[in-house]
Amino acid sequence: MIGPTLPDAGAARALSWSFEPGVVVPLVLIAVLYLRGTRLLGGLARTPGAVTFIAGWLVLTLSLVSPLHEASEQLFSAHMIQHELLMVVAAPLLALSRPLPVLLDGVPRFFRTRVEGFADRPFVARSWHGAQQPPRAWLIQAVVIWLWHVPVLFDATLSNDAMHAAQHLCFLGSAYLFWGSLSTDGVPERGGIAVLSLFTTAVHTGALGALISFARHPLYKAYAARAAAWHLTALSDQQLAGLIMWIPASVAYLIAALLTMRRWLRDSEWSVSRSEREPVGPAVR
Image (cartoon, rainbow, N blue to C red):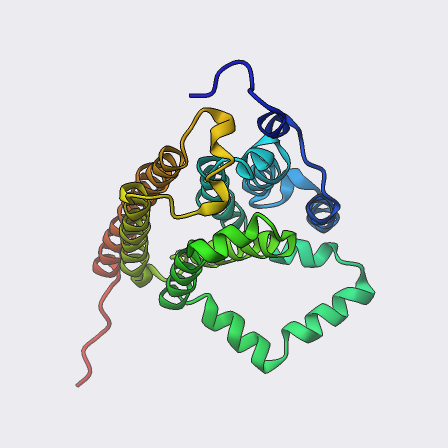
């Protein structure tokens, strides 16, 4: 699709790495806080979830700093790849690692007391707890995905750095909530809800991808002139982006749904067998 030589400077720009302070500084800060937090647990090797956190952080960093980021400003399809890496790869890895306690331990004591005090406020605690519930986390992510793909908003991210950053934060934050809400540890009954959340997410994101793919005219005007530098029409670039959301991303959600269902059935079977093995107490007379 993309030849070995690039036709103009706009396309060549997509081969450069991006080191925007607004992106690099938060990524480095997160890494430093996590490393500081692991010291209380005896280092990275003894920190549960450290491997998945590092993997998630690397995917997050590569998607925002590598040439993919610059390519995403030239091609809608590259932008879609970036978003799927954030929401379907980085977010579940980070959520699985459960990094928040470790990150909080890495915050200097003076600031930590302030953060803990803010987090303990009833409104903040209730809001955070409510957002982590599966139906609400599902709805938050669904609204974020569909809202940011409204053409006017999506086009605005290419000319406004603040909106672009807000879009990425919304995608990553809502996906982190969504994947974190699927945990069934200690609550096997939530397995069915988790499977349903994953399956319906595959359906609605696939539907959005199909709508983008089968549109008869370019929906995102900002990419219309930029795709030509890559020997693509705006419509073919849009169709490719829709297919990326429709097929690979939907398959990832479906695979996660199958794995979750397998674990749910296994835990349910174990719970039943355990209850059958437990001795029955004497009858009450």
